[in-house]
Length: 412
Image (cartoon, rainbow, N blue to C red; front, side, top):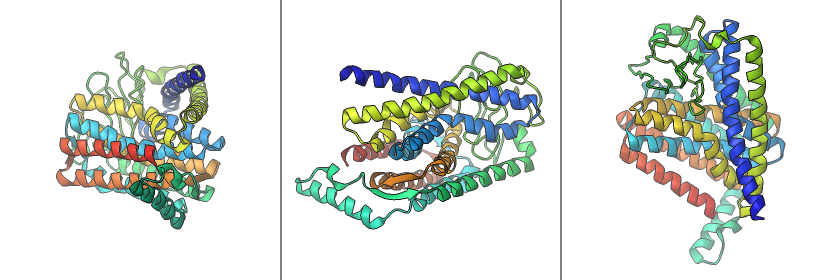
């Protein structure tokens, strides 16, 4: 029994590695292929890089949905978003106050909150069932005569159907098209890497990551060579485009498709990277879902809890590493665009495509998790509005909120 548990833990770790490495190779190959056909870096950043760098969450949610593990499919998305806002931003703010770009405050952050609310609405939750399930465990906890798990949190309260999934995908496509249109209207801003008075540069192996208002143009690999479209050579952690623009200082290709080192890759090598990357992504997603389910059963945990914690944290590790490294170098402005872009992508695209492929049943526990996401999104937005940045004390508050949400998820 113990041996099988350890095997599943090893498989889970191997699955996460395959997801991250596969996404990295997929981005490298796809970006180089697109460059060979003179596709502008802006388009590459908002399509190929955004898709490739979100591949771990996407692969896990789709694999879970196809296997009938709806709890993991949804809790992975919601858990990743909660982790990004509360833990990633919280840690970054504790290290160094996080400034918030004006464009993110005015447009992208409200859109992210709206997407979280929309996800709750399209679930079609039966609120009478939700309320009755919540009253039971709370009353029992007060009287001391009822276990928190007896409240029926696993009961199905709604469904994110195919039509709802298609709606989310349409909204995501509209958002991407708007970003492309907006970025093309301001080419001078894109070329200088500035928007609304905010800019930051790359230091060392950390490429610049813009807020969710611009495309991705290129980054510098950790071996000193040049990559393209926000993809970093051998650094697996520098992955997420955040629906944003990545440019290394003065070395990335321009939007007209100026060739760089990665664009010179032969077509055969591009195809090989894409195929191997996709294979690792698909296999990694299957392995993560399989091992996570077995670990949940061995520990007596629900699939919702394992998806909300272990799986969500595992697929969000690249965002955490990227943002923390940036914060330690004083580039905390990168963190907010990274998180907001990631969260919007998770809800609109990943949840949308997962539901479009296979309708996702939503249990009562997931309803409360989505409410938690909305509350913490609003809290982070209020912190950002107060002084135009998230202070250290507010970062501590976010971390405490995340800890409390995890405790509630374990006890319910």
